[in-house]
Each structure stands twice: as structure tokens, then as C-alpha cells.
Amino acid sequence: MVYCLYMPPDGEDPHSVPAARREKEGTMETLERKKVMLSGIKPSGDLTLGSYLGAIKNWAARAEQFDCYYFMADAHAITVRQKPADLRRRTLEQLAQYIACGLDPEQNTLLIQSHVPAHAELGWVLNCYTMFGELSRMTQFKDKSRKNADNINGGLFTYPCLMAADILLYQPDYVPVGEDQKQHVELARNIVQRFNGIYGQVFRMPEPYIPKVGARVMDLLNPSSKMSKSDEAGAGVVYLMDRPEDIARKFKRAVTDSDTERCVRYDPETKPGVANLMSIYAAATDRSFAQIEAEFEGQGYGVFKPAVADAVIELLRPIREEATRILADKAYLQSVYRAGAEKAAAIANRTLRKVYKKVGFVER
Ligand code: TRP
Image 1 (cartoon, rainbow, N blue to C red):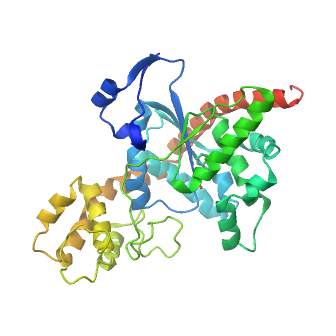
Image 2 (spheres, rainbow, N blue to C red):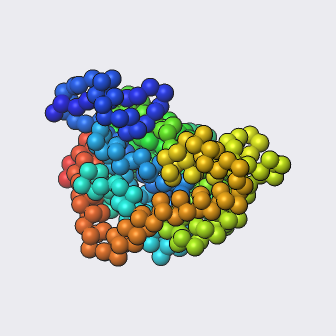
Image 3 (cartoon, protein in one colour):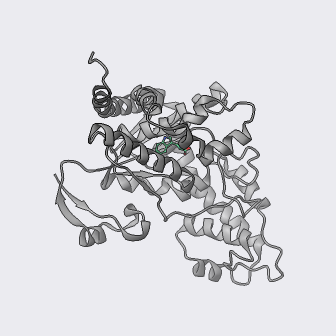
């Protein structure tokens, strides 16, 4: 197969680059395989406008260039106590939402982590190749231990070993993650080095991949912190499944800035609330900040805020409707995750068998 290989400089997201430019700047190479990308998403909170504008919106186009795997990391979610019914609902809801956002299950492998036992199996092996000291240094472990002082369980501690297994099973080239997960990918790389150092070339060395494109959406009530899906209160968080009236209400309460000019001008330093609303409006309507400033020239926040709300309502309406439709079609959803697990297991088991053989397990 001939593929156009192109990795843009500066961490720019390759799928945001027009095909024409990719073809011009990339190199045509004959490869046995398309480059592989894999990412896991923990179904521990409902997806937000921030998840969409910051990440998911850009995923659909990736499938052209990469062989992509996305999985719902349900096994990771239980390191913190979950209500079983909520975990089940969110896992399926997220899958439906990803499809509604344009991730085509024909072109991407979408799976539920617990459906492919190789994750847990390799996870155990990698536990034995990861040091207590390494795991003790993980900032997420320290953070979560502080927040869940009554449930500092073993899974929370060895979480990065399972995550390394998730990654290494599929021999990916790139692992798109947020800044907060970079340390875990680095640990996976250390494990690769250690394991391959002992047994030869078993795992491909994965690269963390932190896309720079995508709007950074902040909380509507607290524009200095990110709009986060795990924010329990949710008053400043717009969820993908919010109804239009909820969205309108949340934007109505959004903080603007107490500066005296009270005009729509992009200045994140002194007007973070307005800057956040402008970023959202820009991403939702494909407009530049200059265009937005011109559009609302001479008008106050009383006109601007409802305009942002309307744009977001229209942006999310088709996603919510499509996700709701997919969610109601249990047979379809089941066919997607079953096909995903089957395809994933075939790849994952190949790696697992190799590992079992290397460490000295008797072949079955
Ligand atoms: N730990 C990731 C998070 O909390 C989710 C995750 C689990 C993941 N396994 C992964 C991400 C493998 C990338 C690759 O967001």
C-alpha cells in the first residue's frame, strides 16, 4: 500500500491540514501498515462542549491518515468508585456520542476496554516490569490519593501499567493524550525500553501526541479553569446532551467581566470571561475574533451572550439528536462494539502471545 506520510511541525494536528498541503509536503511511501494511533477515554463523566471543541471535533478526519483505535476505558474508571448503572450508561452514551460527532465505526476501531481481556492480561505482566518507585512518582496517583483518601486502592497505584498495556498491545506510533496523561505515556516508554532490553524487539516505541489545535474551553462560571467533565456541580459546564433551554440558561449566567468598557473585545488577560465566550463563538461559527468584534461593535454583553448560546444550541442540536437516536438503537450499538472488540482482540492477542512466549509461559 502507498501512503502519504506527513507529520506537521510544531505538534499541529495532521488532520487539520488540508489534503492538498499534506500531499505536497508529505512523502509518498510504501508501507506495510498505516501509522497507528490509539487513545482511551475514561467514561467517568459526561462529555462537554469543551471535549467536543477541544478534541473530538477533530478526530473524524484522522481516519484518513491513520489506523485509529478509540476505547472506552471502563477498567480504568473503576479505580475510583462508580455507580454501576452510571458507568454502564456513560460507556454506551460516550460511544453513541463519538459516532454522532462523526467518528465512523467503519473507519475507526471503537471498543470497550473490558471486552478485550488482553488488556487485563498484559496489564498483569507489565505490573511485574514496573517499579514501585516509578509508580510512586506519578502525579495523577498522588493527586487522586489526596482526593480519594478513603479508597487508595492497588488499582489506582498500578493504573499506569494497565494504561501501558492498553497502548502497547496495538503497537501504535502515536498516542494522542492531554497534557495530564503525558507522564503515563512516558512511563509506557520506559517499560518498552526495559522489556525490549531484556527480550528483544517486542513492543513498538509509542510517541505521546499532544494536538495543539482545538479551542480551549473554560468553565462558564470560572473562566480561569478548564471546562471539565468531572466537575460535579456542572453549572458552568455545558454537556453535549444538554437541552437547548439548559444551554441558554448556562450562557445567561456565564460570567462576563467587570471592566468598564463592557464591549466585545478579545483580551484574555483582563477579560477572560468574554475571551472564553468569544473562543466558543469562534469555534462554533468558524469566525475570527476580528469578525466577532466587528459583528458586535457598539453592542453589550446582553446581545452577545444570547448569540453565543444560540450558536452552541445549533452546534450541539444535531449531535444530541443523532446520539439519542443511536443510543435507542441497542442492536446497532452492540454491533459496533462487538465488531470493534473482535477486530481489536485479533491485534491485541498477537502481541500478548508474543509476550507470553518471551516471559516463559507454556503455550496453550
Ligand atoms: N488515562 C487516560 C485518561 O484518564 C485514559 C486512558 C486509559 C488512555 N488508557 C489509555 C489514554 C491509553 C491513552 C492511551 O484520560
